[in-house]
Length: 149
Picture (spheres, helix red, strand yellow):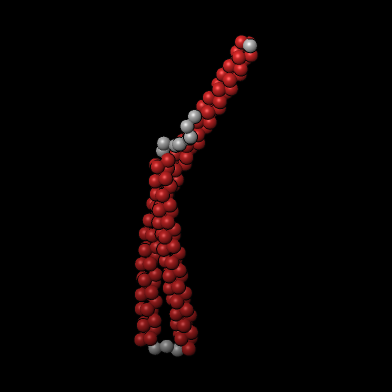
């Protein structure tokens, strides 16, 4: 019997390559999410330290002009943080879509791998049956040869 070969092997290789590409793209998006979260966290920490500074200045005495400047800065920082959070939510939506694509690619690969397993098992069964028939034929021929003597 000829050596086993899976007819869909090129398709399986293509699907595995595609899966790896999607995994890499997903990892890059996750990395962007982490960086964006770190950026927002740093902005919030900077804003919080500025609030503490503002509160300290208020307790020690501050001019109305300085107070307005502090408040304007804090409002501006809050607006920037909200903009960065909108960017973050956009990246998270992109990640969710890529995750769906990743799951679909995994399903495709698993389906073809299952077909490969089934095909290989059928090949083994056919090979085993062929070997049994060969042995039976050999035994039958041996008995015939013994009877002819």
